Length: 266
Image (cartoon, rainbow, N blue to C red):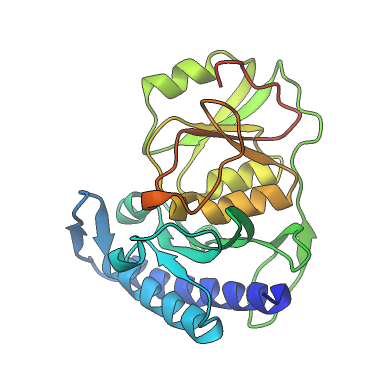
């Protein structure tokens, strides 16, 4: 895989998909349907998925592709593949709260090594460069990359005063109980994979997820966080979160700046 070409293609497709999503978001009322798992889907999800999938298959025909909106891509375990959530945070999109993202990632031997997270309503674009380092590009976004700034996790978080980020739509008592074991300076909430990016930029130190997620929800944000010096581990044994699992479902996990002293129950 030529990572310079991969990054350029992922960035371009994410921006194009974001434009299409915003056309729906800023337009008249749109239809919301329920998928088989009762999660919502809109025309924006489907249009973005079609655009990204066609672009990735054209550019990388020999690389397996997994995408949330195409159930026929979910049937096999893989080690190296592209994975897409064309509109992560559909609930945020439907409620017009803005915290939704386009997620595209490349997984190599079970590890997400390159990824892009684009939040079109927030005007924030995060991605890994060809060498694996993570950046945030400063808009306005054009065909060729503009100004980028390197991002990195908070190198020495104060474990008595952590900034914690949690889900807007999936907060529960178990998550609150776990967070309560830390010294917390403040908390913020965010939708979609933006939570990984807030840890990647040092705007947060800790993101625990004690709820169901799929690999397409997390791979791009995970790649960005890893490229910024962060880590994502399983909640049960603190082993690194891996990808290509049967069914593509994640266990509970913790995303964090390595200076955070994880509670032993994590």
